[in-house]
Length: 297
Image (cartoon, rainbow, N blue to C red):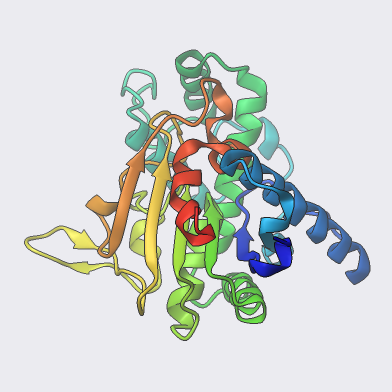
């Protein structure tokens, strides 16, 4: 039977941090790079699923150019604290959620970046220098998106993702890392966009004090003082996957903070530090088992 007898599964991929194509590129070049990224995500999904390439039709929702983190102040790269107050607040909240001991933080009200990088390097057997760069980048991009509810960067990134979903009409939206935050808000801002499956990978949606409370729609009180995040509008099925060692997906189980999550998997996707990398989430058996029913396998 020809593969034309079975429609390809339409998927929109929403990237996380560290995916900028750079500045000053033409629209044509941006589309070339978008196509390359879509093909890479398709290959990773195909690898995990064990299917032929013609079974998937993947589009790449690129929003990194909509975020414009402010330029680093002179000397900031050498500073032990982030000059952006919101970025430093995120760093502090993240460190506390990861369990950074007070003695490692040296008693500061604000966690020093060097102390967190050094502690994480020992805990995960990593090189401290590259880890410090990753931490700065993570805080910069997340705070650029979440700085305020009506920030132009936030609206532009959210609308770009919503526009790709509206144009492509996928059955499945797969969102990694910060992309899960952008896609979550895009689906709420446009309730008419109802993919059958919303799959979040390595998501920081529940990170308290920085991400969770800043979401749109805002979490609301449930029973007692604890806040609950809203489920997705319509009949979209939400599945979350987090590696238990992923330092970005904290806390890892989103169902403890959000309504409407059908399945909340905590599963190892890599034995090495690449457990936050999108390709390992895309290739893992849990992702394959989640997407397989939409392919009829």
